[in-house]
Amino acid sequence: MSDDWTELYRPNNLDEVVGNPKAVAALRQWADNWAAGKPVKKAAVLIGTPGVGKTSAALALAKEYGWDTVEMNASDQRNADAVKSVALRGALGQTFTDSGEFLSTLDGNLKLIVLDEADNLSGKEDRGGVPALVEVVKTTKQPVILIVNDWYALSRKSSALKSDTEQIKFSQIKSVTIRGVLRKIAKDQGITITDRALELLADNANGDMRSAVRDLQAVAMGKDEIKDIDATSVSYREVEKTMYNVMDDIFKSKDADRARRSLAEVDEPPETKLLWIEENLPVAYRDHLDMYKGMKAVATADKYLGRVYRRQYFGFWSYAGDFLSYGVCAAKTREMHGFLRYNFPQYLMKMSRSKGMRAVQASICSKLGEAVHMSAKQTRQDILPYFSRIYISDQEFALKTSLDLELEQEEIAYILGEKIDSAAVKRIMKSMNPDGEKPEKEKKASSKQKEKKKSPVNQSTLF
Ligand SMILES: Nc1ncnc2c1ncn2[C@@H]1O[C@H](COP(=O)(O)OP(=O)(O)OP(=O)(O)O)[C@@H](O)[C@H]1O
Image (tube, rainbow, N blue to C red; front, side, top):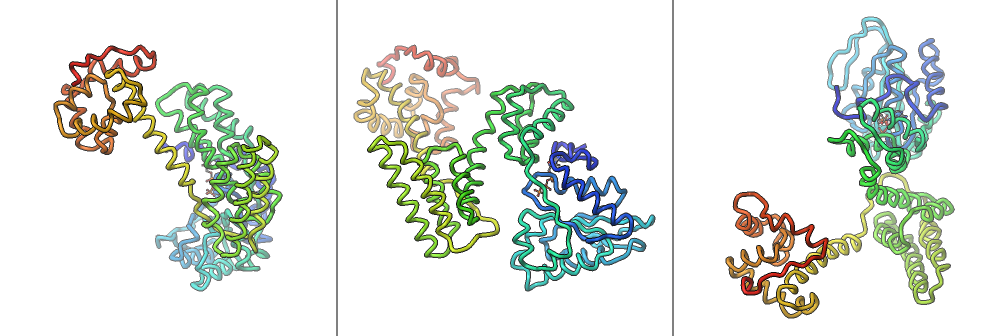
């Protein structure tokens, strides 16, 4: 049995494929025609974003109709011959898998050929990827299903692909539907889960069932009860995910209205939105004029954001939003397709890193300041540089002060200017704690700090 819940709970039949009844009905109709020996279109294309059940539906269909399945990755050019050899043979006789093995068809059953990533044939046109696919969908003697995320990208490469296939669209799964599936899985696993946690997990998935099931499995690890707080741990990813979606709406499509709505809906401060767009505009717009116009819109948005604070007029936020969405979206000369690798804003990354560093420095200064009866600020200016020098050069001093000040590993690393897991830091930690047991003092340290009950450190031990 699979440990991966997305495999374990893959639908076993078409009725278990939730959320897209029309698509499932269309798929059944297509399969019925094949089963009756009169396929109207020999190949079906299942179109939809990742994790909405396209592959599951194809596999469930084969099970329901008692067909064998041959799954192949269409983007791998090496498979083209293997696909043809399976597809172009009749139901009787023998066929090959992509690894060249014989597949016997003793009962004369149909064989469902599932071609994953069929939209990923980019750059392969000249090497025959698309023509091979067209030949297959026209002449196959076996039912063929193409799985695609981006139908536009594929269909514009060949009009035959459009006319010779049955296109079936899968929409994103509604949050409430996802919730139902998650509830069933939790029950089956003997896990209790709060309604709020279910809601959080389902909402976070943004219509992607696979990611919802994965998140559930991740938060359930080692637990038999999932509380609200457990589910909130996945929510940071939602921010990125949502911003990534907004990026696509702004940079790829020409639908400026959608771009505007999408940017307005994402729950992030306007400054953060601007940073995302500024960071990724050069990734998306390779044309210099598009980039120039886009950056101009970003600059104008930035001007309005500045005015919000200077004039305390929050109406300017919407102006800024319009420039970032409408402005940037309309700056391009044509729609963009294909995958774009967006970056998390560098500025935010640096800031959060240095925020972490500043917090560590503040905590050292507060401990040290207490020992020498000085404010944390004064300690930082007048004591810390000298303290660090002595600490680095005198091991005995380092050990003593680390124990007296109850320094944590990250604080020691900061003073030494080393990485947290460096040999020097480990050496001091080990000397502080030779038996591997946490000293009593250290154990109490964090709770003591929280209580703000400052322990009187003996100055004579320190210096
Ligand atoms: N509609 C659905 N009903 C039930 N389970 C689903 C559905 N969609 C997805 N799942 C769950 O998510 C997993 C992944 O789904 P599946 O592989 O079918 O998605 P997909 O649309 O083919 O995605 P991709 O395009 O990334 O391959 C399934 O194994 C199943 O556990």
